[in-house]
Image 1 (cartoon, rainbow, N blue to C red):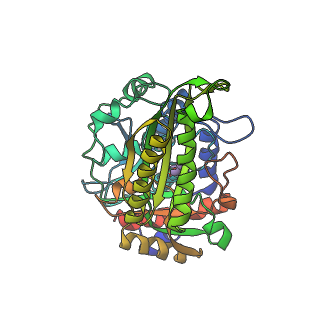
Image 2: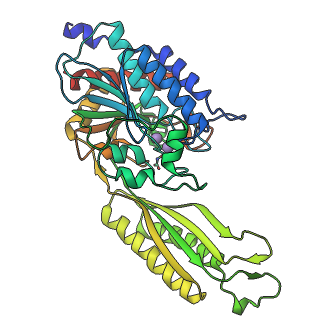
Image 3: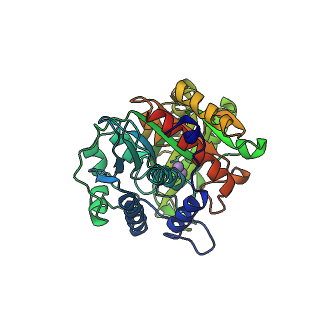
Length: 413
Ligand code: HGY
Ligand code: MN
Ligand code: MN
Protein backbone atom coordinates (compact mmCIF):
# COMPACT_ATOMS: atom_id res chain seq x y z
CA UNK A 1 0.00 0.00 0.00
CA UNK A 2 1.33 3.44 -0.95
CA UNK A 3 2.75 5.50 1.94
CA UNK A 4 0.23 8.32 1.36
CA UNK A 5 -2.68 5.88 1.53
CA UNK A 6 -1.33 4.36 4.73
CA UNK A 7 -0.97 7.78 6.32
CA UNK A 8 -4.63 8.46 5.57
CA UNK A 9 -5.83 5.31 7.31
CA UNK A 10 -8.04 5.95 10.33
CA UNK A 11 -9.85 3.65 12.72
CA UNK A 12 -13.66 3.56 12.88
CA UNK A 13 -14.22 5.41 16.17
CA UNK A 14 -17.93 4.58 16.29
CA UNK A 15 -17.31 0.86 15.86
CA UNK A 16 -14.74 1.02 18.69
CA UNK A 17 -17.18 2.89 20.97
CA UNK A 18 -19.82 0.27 20.13
CA UNK A 19 -17.56 -2.53 21.36
CA UNK A 20 -16.57 -0.54 24.49
CA UNK A 21 -20.24 -0.02 25.35
CA UNK A 22 -21.14 -3.65 24.61
CA UNK A 23 -18.38 -4.96 26.89
CA UNK A 24 -19.38 -2.34 29.48
CA UNK A 25 -22.85 -3.85 29.68
CA UNK A 26 -21.27 -6.99 31.19
CA UNK A 27 -20.96 -6.35 34.92
CA UNK A 28 -22.74 -3.01 34.58
CA UNK A 29 -23.58 -1.48 37.99
CA UNK A 30 -27.05 -0.04 38.64
CA UNK A 31 -25.86 3.54 39.20
CA UNK A 32 -23.28 3.43 36.38
CA UNK A 33 -19.82 1.93 36.17
CA UNK A 34 -18.72 -1.67 35.88
CA UNK A 35 -17.76 -4.57 38.16
CA UNK A 36 -16.02 -7.42 36.31
CA UNK A 37 -13.71 -8.88 38.99
CA UNK A 38 -11.16 -11.35 37.66
CA UNK A 39 -12.33 -14.97 37.33
CA UNK A 40 -15.95 -14.25 38.21
CA UNK A 41 -18.91 -15.07 35.97
CA UNK A 42 -18.87 -11.48 34.70
CA UNK A 43 -15.22 -11.93 33.73
CA UNK A 44 -16.14 -15.14 31.90
CA UNK A 45 -18.91 -13.37 29.98
CA UNK A 46 -16.57 -10.53 29.08
CA UNK A 47 -13.90 -12.97 27.95
CA UNK A 48 -16.40 -14.90 25.82
CA UNK A 49 -17.56 -11.69 24.13
CA UNK A 50 -14.03 -10.54 23.29
CA UNK A 51 -12.91 -14.00 22.15
CA UNK A 52 -16.00 -14.06 19.89
CA UNK A 53 -14.89 -10.76 18.33
CA UNK A 54 -11.34 -12.09 17.93
CA UNK A 55 -12.66 -15.12 16.04
CA UNK A 56 -14.98 -12.97 13.88
CA UNK A 57 -11.87 -11.00 12.86
CA UNK A 58 -10.11 -14.19 11.85
CA UNK A 59 -7.56 -14.17 14.67
CA UNK A 60 -5.99 -17.42 15.75
CA UNK A 61 -6.97 -17.50 19.45
CA UNK A 62 -4.86 -19.25 22.12
CA UNK A 63 -5.58 -19.45 25.87
CA UNK A 64 -2.58 -20.21 28.10
CA UNK A 65 -2.47 -21.96 31.48
CA UNK A 66 -3.01 -18.67 33.31
CA UNK A 67 -6.06 -17.83 31.20
CA UNK A 68 -4.20 -15.14 29.26
CA UNK A 69 -5.83 -14.83 25.79
CA UNK A 70 -3.84 -14.01 22.64
CA UNK A 71 -5.43 -13.55 19.21
CA UNK A 72 -2.81 -13.63 16.42
CA UNK A 73 -3.09 -12.27 12.86
CA UNK A 74 -0.34 -13.77 10.64
CA UNK A 75 2.12 -11.54 8.82
CA UNK A 76 3.98 -12.08 5.58
CA UNK A 77 6.79 -13.52 7.67
CA UNK A 78 6.81 -15.86 10.68
CA UNK A 79 8.21 -14.65 14.00
CA UNK A 80 7.30 -12.97 17.30
CA UNK A 81 4.24 -10.72 16.97
CA UNK A 82 3.73 -7.07 17.75
CA UNK A 83 1.26 -7.28 20.64
CA UNK A 84 -1.45 -4.71 21.42
CA UNK A 85 -2.69 -5.70 24.86
CA UNK A 86 -4.26 -4.78 28.16
CA UNK A 87 -6.92 -6.31 30.43
CA UNK A 88 -10.69 -6.68 30.66
CA UNK A 89 -11.07 -7.34 34.38
CA UNK A 90 -12.03 -4.30 36.46
CA UNK A 91 -11.98 -3.23 40.11
CA UNK A 92 -15.29 -3.50 41.98
CA UNK A 93 -16.12 0.17 41.31
CA UNK A 94 -14.68 0.29 37.80
CA UNK A 95 -15.44 2.16 34.62
CA UNK A 96 -15.90 1.42 30.92
CA UNK A 97 -12.36 2.22 29.82
CA UNK A 98 -9.65 0.97 32.24
CA UNK A 99 -8.09 -1.95 30.36
CA UNK A 100 -10.97 -2.52 27.95
CA UNK A 101 -9.86 0.44 25.81
CA UNK A 102 -6.46 -1.10 25.03
CA UNK A 103 -7.86 -4.50 24.11
CA UNK A 104 -10.77 -3.22 22.02
CA UNK A 105 -8.66 -0.57 20.27
CA UNK A 106 -6.31 -3.41 19.32
CA UNK A 107 -9.29 -5.28 17.86
CA UNK A 108 -10.33 -2.12 15.98
CA UNK A 109 -6.84 -1.82 14.48
CA UNK A 110 -7.11 -5.44 13.29
CA UNK A 111 -10.61 -4.75 11.96
CA UNK A 112 -9.21 -1.86 9.93
CA UNK A 113 -6.27 -3.91 8.63
CA UNK A 114 -8.77 -6.53 7.47
CA UNK A 115 -11.07 -3.94 5.87
CA UNK A 116 -8.11 -2.35 4.08
CA UNK A 117 -6.64 -5.68 3.03
CA UNK A 118 -3.32 -4.81 4.63
CA UNK A 119 -0.85 -7.60 5.29
CA UNK A 120 1.87 -6.60 7.75
CA UNK A 121 5.37 -8.01 7.59
CA UNK A 122 5.25 -9.28 11.17
CA UNK A 123 2.39 -11.10 12.89
CA UNK A 124 0.13 -8.81 14.94
CA UNK A 125 -1.60 -9.92 18.14
CA UNK A 126 -4.31 -8.61 20.43
CA UNK A 127 -4.12 -9.87 24.02
CA UNK A 128 -5.83 -9.60 27.37
CA UNK A 129 -4.16 -10.79 30.56
CA UNK A 130 -5.65 -12.45 33.59
CA UNK A 131 -6.24 -10.50 36.81
CA UNK A 132 -4.52 -7.23 35.97
CA UNK A 133 -6.32 -5.52 38.84
CA UNK A 134 -5.32 -7.94 41.60
CA UNK A 135 -8.64 -7.29 43.36
CA UNK A 136 -9.47 -10.83 44.55
CA UNK A 137 -6.08 -12.47 44.02
CA UNK A 138 -2.83 -10.63 44.81
CA UNK A 139 -0.73 -9.26 43.19
CA UNK A 140 -1.98 -7.13 40.34
CA UNK A 141 -0.64 -7.56 36.78
CA UNK A 142 -0.56 -11.25 37.68
CA UNK A 143 -1.31 -12.82 34.27
CA UNK A 144 1.12 -10.65 32.30
CA UNK A 145 3.83 -11.15 34.96
CA UNK A 146 3.59 -14.93 34.51
CA UNK A 147 3.27 -14.51 30.71
CA UNK A 148 6.61 -12.68 30.67
CA UNK A 149 8.36 -14.99 33.15
CA UNK A 150 8.40 -12.58 36.11
CA UNK A 151 6.15 -14.72 38.35
CA UNK A 152 6.06 -18.52 38.62
CA UNK A 153 2.97 -20.12 37.01
CA UNK A 154 2.60 -22.94 39.58
CA UNK A 155 2.83 -20.56 42.54
CA UNK A 156 0.32 -18.17 40.99
CA UNK A 157 -2.15 -20.95 40.11
CA UNK A 158 -2.11 -21.97 43.81
CA UNK A 159 -2.89 -18.42 45.01
CA UNK A 160 -5.74 -18.22 47.55
CA UNK A 161 -7.93 -15.15 47.06
CA UNK A 162 -9.34 -12.76 49.66
CA UNK A 163 -12.58 -14.74 49.51
CA UNK A 164 -10.81 -18.10 50.01
CA UNK A 165 -11.07 -19.24 46.38
CA UNK A 166 -8.05 -20.94 44.75
CA UNK A 167 -7.04 -19.25 41.51
CA UNK A 168 -6.64 -22.47 39.49
CA UNK A 169 -10.13 -23.64 40.55
CA UNK A 170 -11.75 -20.36 39.50
CA UNK A 171 -9.88 -20.39 36.20
CA UNK A 172 -11.22 -23.90 35.49
CA UNK A 173 -14.69 -22.93 36.71
CA UNK A 174 -14.98 -20.12 34.15
CA UNK A 175 -13.54 -22.33 31.40
CA UNK A 176 -10.26 -20.44 30.84
CA UNK A 177 -7.68 -22.88 32.20
CA UNK A 178 -5.96 -23.02 28.83
CA UNK A 179 -3.54 -25.51 27.35
CA UNK A 180 -0.98 -23.14 25.84
CA UNK A 181 2.29 -23.02 27.78
CA UNK A 182 2.94 -19.79 29.62
CA UNK A 183 6.05 -17.80 30.42
CA UNK A 184 7.95 -18.16 27.18
CA UNK A 185 5.95 -16.11 24.66
CA UNK A 186 8.27 -13.53 23.16
CA UNK A 187 6.97 -10.42 21.45
CA UNK A 188 8.68 -8.31 18.79
CA UNK A 189 7.21 -5.28 20.58
CA UNK A 190 4.36 -4.47 22.96
CA UNK A 191 2.15 -1.36 22.76
CA UNK A 192 -0.71 -0.56 25.14
CA UNK A 193 -3.33 2.17 24.76
CA UNK A 194 -4.77 3.10 28.17
CA UNK A 195 -6.61 5.91 29.92
CA UNK A 196 -4.26 8.02 32.04
CA UNK A 197 -6.31 7.51 35.21
CA UNK A 198 -4.76 10.69 36.61
CA UNK A 199 -5.31 14.45 36.19
CA UNK A 200 -2.36 15.57 34.05
CA UNK A 201 -3.63 15.41 30.44
CA UNK A 202 -7.13 16.60 31.34
CA UNK A 203 -5.81 19.56 33.39
CA UNK A 204 -3.36 20.61 30.67
CA UNK A 205 -5.81 20.05 27.81
CA UNK A 206 -3.45 17.60 26.09
CA UNK A 207 -4.92 14.73 24.03
CA UNK A 208 -2.14 12.12 23.95
CA UNK A 209 0.37 10.95 26.56
CA UNK A 210 3.62 9.38 25.31
CA UNK A 211 4.34 7.32 28.41
CA UNK A 212 8.02 7.21 29.39
CA UNK A 213 7.69 4.53 32.07
CA UNK A 214 5.81 3.20 35.11
CA UNK A 215 6.58 3.81 38.77
CA UNK A 216 7.61 0.95 41.03
CA UNK A 217 4.88 -0.80 43.06
CA UNK A 218 5.23 -2.55 46.43
CA UNK A 219 2.18 -4.35 47.87
CA UNK A 220 2.71 -5.69 51.43
CA UNK A 221 0.46 -7.52 53.89
CA UNK A 222 0.91 -7.15 57.68
CA UNK A 223 -0.76 -9.44 60.25
CA UNK A 224 -0.88 -8.16 63.84
CA UNK A 225 -2.00 -10.41 66.72
CA UNK A 226 -3.05 -9.27 70.20
CA UNK A 227 -5.82 -10.43 72.53
CA UNK A 228 -9.58 -10.32 71.85
CA UNK A 229 -11.18 -8.82 74.93
CA UNK A 230 -14.28 -7.13 76.30
CA UNK A 231 -14.60 -3.48 75.23
CA UNK A 232 -16.15 -2.49 78.57
CA UNK A 233 -14.21 -4.38 81.18
CA UNK A 234 -10.66 -4.33 79.81
CA UNK A 235 -8.66 -1.39 81.25
CA UNK A 236 -6.93 0.66 78.52
CA UNK A 237 -3.54 -0.11 80.08
CA UNK A 238 -4.18 -3.86 79.86
CA UNK A 239 -5.11 -4.04 76.17
CA UNK A 240 -3.29 -5.78 73.34
CA UNK A 241 -5.36 -4.16 70.62
CA UNK A 242 -4.26 -5.35 67.16
CA UNK A 243 -6.63 -2.86 65.53
CA UNK A 244 -4.90 0.05 67.26
CA UNK A 245 -1.52 -1.05 65.86
CA UNK A 246 -3.00 -1.39 62.36
CA UNK A 247 -4.57 2.05 62.56
CA UNK A 248 -1.25 3.58 63.67
CA UNK A 249 0.49 1.86 60.75
CA UNK A 250 -2.03 3.37 58.32
CA UNK A 251 -1.32 6.85 59.73
CA UNK A 252 2.45 6.19 59.56
CA UNK A 253 2.12 5.20 55.87
CA UNK A 254 0.56 8.57 55.08
CA UNK A 255 3.18 10.41 57.17
CA UNK A 256 6.05 8.53 55.51
CA UNK A 257 4.74 9.44 52.04
CA UNK A 258 4.31 13.13 52.92
CA UNK A 259 7.80 13.28 54.44
CA UNK A 260 9.40 11.40 51.53
CA UNK A 261 8.26 14.07 49.07
CA UNK A 262 5.82 14.32 46.12
CA UNK A 263 7.06 11.22 44.29
CA UNK A 264 6.05 8.79 47.05
CA UNK A 265 2.52 7.37 47.13
CA UNK A 266 1.10 5.33 49.99
CA UNK A 267 -2.37 3.81 50.18
CA UNK A 268 -4.14 1.58 52.70
CA UNK A 269 -7.14 0.36 50.76
CA UNK A 270 -8.13 -2.54 52.97
CA UNK A 271 -7.98 -3.35 56.70
CA UNK A 272 -9.65 -6.35 58.37
CA UNK A 273 -10.19 -6.49 62.14
CA UNK A 274 -11.13 -9.79 63.80
CA UNK A 275 -13.55 -10.68 65.19
CA UNK A 276 -14.80 -7.36 63.77
CA UNK A 277 -17.39 -6.65 66.47
CA UNK A 278 -18.10 -3.25 68.01
CA UNK A 279 -17.78 -4.45 71.62
CA UNK A 280 -14.70 -6.66 71.21
CA UNK A 281 -11.11 -5.42 71.32
CA UNK A 282 -9.70 -6.85 68.04
CA UNK A 283 -7.26 -9.68 68.67
CA UNK A 284 -6.16 -9.76 65.04
CA UNK A 285 -5.73 -7.19 62.27
CA UNK A 286 -4.72 -7.62 58.64
CA UNK A 287 -3.70 -4.47 56.77
CA UNK A 288 -2.20 -4.07 53.27
CA UNK A 289 -0.20 -1.15 51.87
CA UNK A 290 0.25 -0.08 48.25
CA UNK A 291 3.46 1.99 47.96
CA UNK A 292 4.57 3.55 44.65
CA UNK A 293 7.48 5.68 43.55
CA UNK A 294 9.33 6.26 40.28
CA UNK A 295 12.50 6.21 42.42
CA UNK A 296 13.34 2.63 43.43
CA UNK A 297 15.51 3.60 46.40
CA UNK A 298 12.91 5.94 47.82
CA UNK A 299 10.29 3.21 47.46
CA UNK A 300 12.43 0.66 49.32
CA UNK A 301 13.26 3.19 52.07
CA UNK A 302 9.58 3.94 52.68
CA UNK A 303 8.79 0.23 52.87
CA UNK A 304 11.59 -0.32 55.39
CA UNK A 305 10.32 2.57 57.51
CA UNK A 306 6.85 0.97 57.69
CA UNK A 307 8.23 -2.44 58.66
CA UNK A 308 10.34 -0.90 61.44
CA UNK A 309 7.31 1.06 62.64
CA UNK A 310 5.14 -2.07 62.59
CA UNK A 311 7.47 -3.99 64.97
CA UNK A 312 7.91 -1.01 67.28
CA UNK A 313 4.17 -0.24 67.51
CA UNK A 314 3.29 -3.92 67.98
CA UNK A 315 5.84 -4.36 70.78
CA UNK A 316 4.51 -1.24 72.53
CA UNK A 317 0.99 -2.74 72.47
CA UNK A 318 2.15 -6.19 73.56
CA UNK A 319 1.20 -7.64 70.20
CA UNK A 320 3.10 -9.77 67.68
CA UNK A 321 3.44 -8.76 64.03
CA UNK A 322 4.53 -10.37 60.78
CA UNK A 323 4.52 -9.17 57.17
CA UNK A 324 4.87 -10.61 53.66
CA UNK A 325 5.47 -9.03 50.26
CA UNK A 326 2.53 -9.36 47.84
CA UNK A 327 4.14 -7.49 44.93
CA UNK A 328 7.59 -6.08 44.29
CA UNK A 329 7.57 -4.42 40.83
CA UNK A 330 10.57 -2.16 40.11
CA UNK A 331 10.22 1.24 38.37
CA UNK A 332 10.16 0.48 34.63
CA UNK A 333 11.37 2.76 31.81
CA UNK A 334 9.79 2.27 28.35
CA UNK A 335 11.60 2.00 25.01
CA UNK A 336 12.89 5.42 23.95
CA UNK A 337 12.44 4.68 20.25
CA UNK A 338 8.82 3.66 20.73
CA UNK A 339 8.11 6.68 22.93
CA UNK A 340 9.54 8.89 20.14
CA UNK A 341 7.33 7.09 17.60
CA UNK A 342 4.21 7.67 19.73
CA UNK A 343 5.07 11.35 20.10
CA UNK A 344 5.77 11.71 16.34
CA UNK A 345 2.60 9.82 15.37
CA UNK A 346 0.44 12.00 17.62
CA UNK A 347 1.97 15.18 16.17
CA UNK A 348 1.54 13.84 12.62
CA UNK A 349 -2.12 13.24 13.34
CA UNK A 350 -2.43 16.81 14.62
CA UNK A 351 -2.86 15.96 18.31
CA UNK A 352 -1.25 17.69 21.28
CA UNK A 353 1.08 15.25 23.05
CA UNK A 354 3.04 15.18 26.33
CA UNK A 355 5.77 12.82 27.58
CA UNK A 356 4.88 11.59 31.04
CA UNK A 357 5.33 8.71 33.51
CA UNK A 358 2.46 6.44 34.50
CA UNK A 359 1.16 6.56 38.07
CA UNK A 360 -0.85 3.39 37.58
CA UNK A 361 0.59 -0.08 37.08
CA UNK A 362 0.01 -1.79 33.73
CA UNK A 363 0.59 -5.07 31.94
CA UNK A 364 3.09 -3.16 29.76
CA UNK A 365 5.56 -2.99 32.64
CA UNK A 366 5.84 -6.78 32.55
CA UNK A 367 6.97 -6.71 28.91
CA UNK A 368 9.44 -3.84 29.14
CA UNK A 369 12.45 -5.96 30.16
CA UNK A 370 11.82 -8.49 27.35
CA UNK A 371 10.99 -6.38 24.28
CA UNK A 372 10.56 -2.76 23.13
CA UNK A 373 7.48 -1.60 25.05
CA UNK A 374 5.55 1.63 25.39
CA UNK A 375 2.12 3.06 26.21
CA UNK A 376 -0.22 5.65 24.76
CA UNK A 377 -2.42 7.60 27.20
CA UNK A 378 -5.65 9.45 26.59
CA UNK A 379 -7.16 11.82 29.18
CA UNK A 380 -9.35 10.79 32.13
CA UNK A 381 -11.96 13.47 32.83
CA UNK A 382 -11.15 15.14 36.17
CA UNK A 383 -8.38 12.55 36.61
CA UNK A 384 -10.88 10.04 37.95
CA UNK A 385 -10.46 6.25 37.64
CA UNK A 386 -11.11 3.12 39.72
CA UNK A 387 -14.39 4.96 40.17
CA UNK A 388 -17.75 4.49 38.47
CA UNK A 389 -17.54 8.06 37.13
CA UNK A 390 -14.48 7.24 35.02
CA UNK A 391 -14.88 8.99 31.63
CA UNK A 392 -12.91 9.57 28.45
CA UNK A 393 -14.51 11.31 25.45
CA UNK A 394 -15.15 9.41 22.18
CA UNK A 395 -12.99 12.01 20.40
CA UNK A 396 -10.01 11.28 22.67
CA UNK A 397 -10.61 7.54 22.33
CA UNK A 398 -10.57 7.87 18.54
CA UNK A 399 -7.38 9.94 18.71
CA UNK A 400 -5.69 7.31 20.88
CA UNK A 401 -6.86 4.53 18.55
CA UNK A 402 -5.37 6.31 15.52
CA UNK A 403 -2.04 6.76 17.29
CA UNK A 404 -2.10 3.04 18.17
CA UNK A 405 -2.81 2.26 14.49
CA UNK A 406 0.15 4.36 13.31
CA UNK A 407 2.52 2.85 15.87
CA UNK A 408 1.37 -0.66 14.97
CA UNK A 409 1.82 -0.11 11.22
CA UNK A 410 5.37 1.20 11.74
CA UNK A 411 6.36 -1.48 14.26
CA UNK A 412 4.88 -4.42 12.35
CA UNK A 413 6.76 -3.54 9.14
O1 HGY B 1 -2.74 -1.11 40.52
C1 HGY B 1 -2.73 -0.52 39.45
O2 HGY B 1 -2.15 0.52 39.31
C2 HGY B 1 -3.48 -1.10 38.27
O3 HGY B 1 -4.70 -0.41 38.15
N1 HGY B 1 -3.69 -2.51 38.43
MN1 MN C 1 -5.65 -0.78 33.77
MN1 MN D 1 -7.01 -0.46 36.97
